[in-house]
Image (cartoon, rainbow, N blue to C red; front, side, top):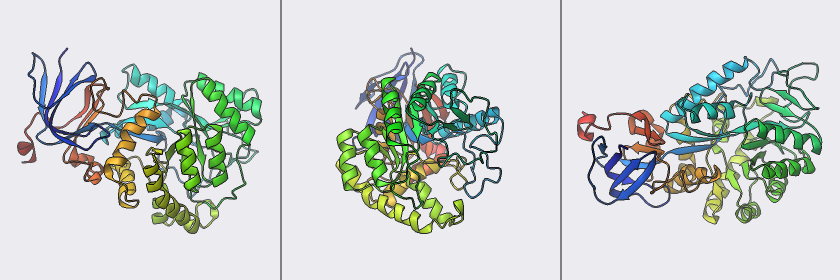
Length: 438
């Protein structure tokens, strides 16, 4: 089979500092070799002189809502559940556009954080079977929660379901509402049966909001049932968990991913390391919330609690990174002030961790490559540039481990995106860099 051979490149393998002057050979969808010298070609091979550009693993987002389209947090006058303002097919169109846009931004893998109408699992099937171009998807469930929780916001007299009420379980857009341990066990099994590999829960409120530390959206026994049931079926569980007590219980119960974690502290960091818990800090949401001065959201003043949350995570994140917590990027992209169609937005999240938290760019890029691959259960295949790994690769002008802002301008600096050994973005790679610049 014909090979793609990258020569004269700077290679970031997802872990070690960038090495200059290497040759990387891609064959049959995987990295076949990483050498210090060019080894020759056969008929049909494509040789790409990187001319000092950086070859790195494709990036991943570990918190992704593909169908969010400038979702208005500042007002929901129809009081409809997420994804129910338009027909289901419309949500699929939005998700397809978002996934294809993600590729052009250098995201070759996304991990779902909640969807409607089984869209994650369905679009994963289409991509895996070659019917659709898109990144790898680790599919998530709907938001699995209880009656009257923070996401059950339609008045009780609205019949806002999509015809899937059964056995006491209500499915309405992105929400799945049930009550009691037995109902949660059934709901989790059903979502896994529909293709979910990640179950999304909302144990607490919060994330920029002032919330009572004792207030819970789901009981302890219900949450433990969700986690045990998912793990019995080989699925993972993630949770929107912001309060200190909620985070501690979720970690001890075996939750795989803590989203947001506004009240993270040293004890929680130790627990995350001990239990191998992944952590998605999602700082961009809070930063943009403050920048947009969205004090009227939910009818309360958010400036003080949002600033408190941001300051705490900014202080704790370097400690978590130094302690070895498995941090992953990703955020609620698609809300009104964080639109998916803002070119470079996913890399702008990464830049926050470098600029605001003082974490080295190389570490943050490892979160986006190696850690995302590990969370997807494929640490030996995804997120690296080494023999045997899947050839999900980026070609970048410059070295993003030294200047992470390069990735925030993909139109100027991202020349190539490869998934499974095939280019989905191929911009002048066969033209010498000097000539392309002219």
